[in-house]
Image (spheres, rainbow, N blue to C red):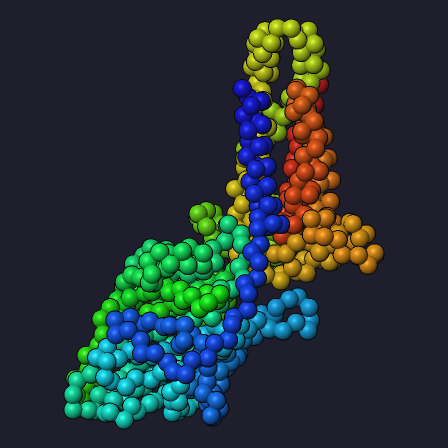
Length: 572
């Protein structure tokens, strides 16, 4: 029974790793096809009760007659521009992040104009709920006051509809990634008007996603205190079934938008007590899937003559940095804004792991060293528990000759053999199932560290020593081309890097310190485990393989020390 428990624990750990490996190697979706360029002569009038966009609107481009005026955006962390035609933030580059680790790599460009295959932008506007008030549209040229947009340097956009209504939008940008916009309408006409202000984020195609089941990419938000997530596949299916928005609901405060692995665009009210309506829309335009996340008041605003009405919102567009999201959550009252980072169900373990690694990084200046020190600290913390397990394993190994003699003597009487073995375990005060304890302890640590390496941007492009330039990516070396000496690029399936081999070797020698299973079949399985794990971890992030190798070395040192003490005690 104890051997069965041990094998079950091992099977569970191998199963988890196999699932990770299958997804990392084979479950990457194909790149979506390019967007077909469609030109429509005009922009349809949106519905008065929602911010509705049709495929014609999605493909509308800047009017060709004149060049649209643009307002520069600059704060040291981002660089881009706002189009005064359509009041659209459609160019934004993140100055702190490059596409790759190469020195000449281009910077990450988060937002792009409509009409491009990678069109991705934010826009602010109004809908005429009374069906008679002229409101700005995609081709409206706004008058600009101020610029460039940056910290302590707001920009005001104005447009007069010629019917007595003046539309304004005051835009601000902080020192990081948060834009603030106050949309205002002043009614100087003789009659009341009814309009619906809104803000939206548009994606002109379905982006390529990582495709890992442990990472959410798509629509995300915290609405009325609850985390809301929709993948692109689920959103498309729901929108098709409902023949309308994939999701719509009201929330007091909160936030919602689109999340990628490392980047986020999200809309929210400036006042956390404001109640807004959040909507996720899928727009099918032939073979192209377009997406929109929008927010608006629950009902249109009626503006009497001489009165004004406004909507104050924020837009986050940037990198999902843990401490920055924590700061916005606390300082601006944005509920659970840190949950934009997919720390998963083990949030209570994963996020503290990140804080510990980040603190160690600030101390040593290298995330790889931080992982080594953190692993050592975990070993110290779990030392009493692991010590007990290793003592039992040392005792099991010393009993090997006795158990072999017992199996040969009672091979025809399994019941008697099991009874004598249990008596031997009891007499020697050994628990044979305790050998699975180190494995069971390592599973949650492995998973939590895997999540930290996989989802936090702080680990992205973090170097170690030697050839490891990105701890969040697999080790780039490969034994099948002699680590780069042969000009040959093997298929991804034949990726066997140096650190995976180091991990396999340490696992092999660690296994030699453990007692051999009594069953020959189990013994064969254990002998092949280092080889299996070497190939499985080949495609995992290098930081995780380094952790596993270092953990094996520490375990070997601890186990060897305990075995020497056990031998000395037996000799005495």
